Image (tube, rainbow, N blue to C red; front, side, top):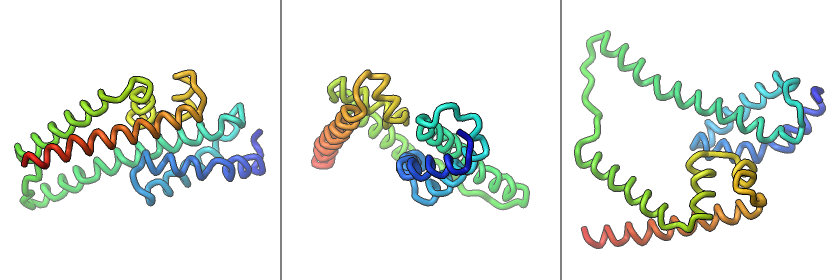
Length: 178
């Protein structure tokens, strides 16, 4: 391992799958692209630490996830720094906190989601929780549940469909009452 040729082959083989994963983690195309580039750069710099080439995809995805979370933390802190600077200059800052109605709505929505999740059969709920809520790689989820990757993907798809259908039912019922 450790040559530029090996890295290029591994990167070309796995970059699309890792990019799709970064889309889910980062939430938008621009950040996912930036994160993938940074992750590839970091992976190349530390290629000598990769002992098994077959673990490259998971390794690259883990690096990408860390880069994405650092980016999100930095973006979360930036407004605080900007506000601090504005306060130092004496600029009046209007309150942007959510009102009681918005807070109540958010709590209600969380409860609806939690209840909908509880309606899923255990085998679908567990896959959904591990893959979509915990952001674990599909291979890890399949291994943890001792099922094939194809079975994990099938269960995840089914869980998403069932959850979406359940949420549609509940939300349509709530809107009819309003």
